[in-house]
Image (tube, rainbow, N blue to C red; front, side, top):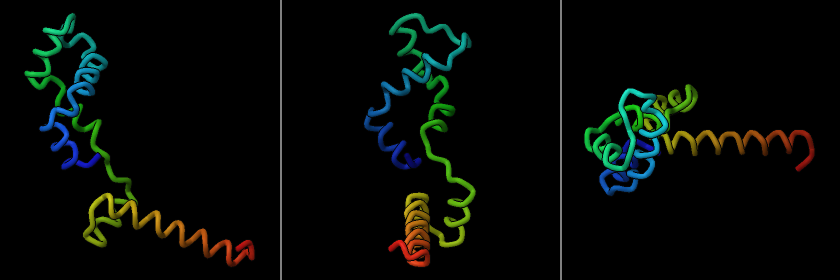
Length: 100
């Protein structure tokens, strides 16, 4: 999920369930979450929001980041570019080996 997709889903309320689960799994006693009321209060306080957001957003690999900066493209386009290059390399290898 890109940051833009995350922001759009968040604004639409589509991540509420995942956010609630994240809080329950990651509070580690920093905050007492004992019922729905305390969970809702934690969500309203944006408790652990930054780490939740970071966990949801795809981070580019070193190769993807290089392609993104080299060609000034998005992460999604970089992944598509890499997949195309890998497919072309596979096709070349098959032709070279006589298996295609």
